[in-house]
Image (cartoon, rainbow, N blue to C red; front, side, top):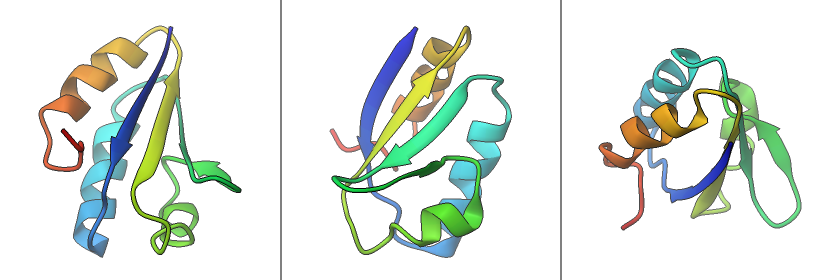
Length: 79
């Protein structure tokens, strides 16, 4: 299963909280902009994208749907 969601991360605390959430799941989590894709479980990778808002999260794997469900309950998700 592959899911995509648009998110905004406004602070280092948001990034930390996102990484904690993503790290609970085995699925591959990537964050992308028009020109760059980084590991969604990497603090430095995500920081390098902060000026490109909103960001797109792509999760792929057996528990991607569960991850998306939890992500949908956060303030990161853009409605």
